[in-house]
Image (cartoon, helix red, strand yellow):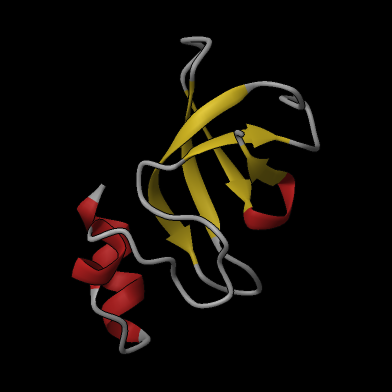
Length: 84
């Protein structure tokens, strides 16, 4: 969880502590541990929680822990919606 995020964020001059404190990454709409709904793709309609940031460009890509217990998936910001 900390490895990829720390490398990406430190490389881009972003403090990883900001993400873990609940602030979104640049160009991202979501925060660490935020509940989300998958809006597009193979897992559309499922819910999950954001675990980590795996990429920042061209848009943030998050590791999402699916609430169904199916495991974790990598999803871009544009494929997610707020859970509520």
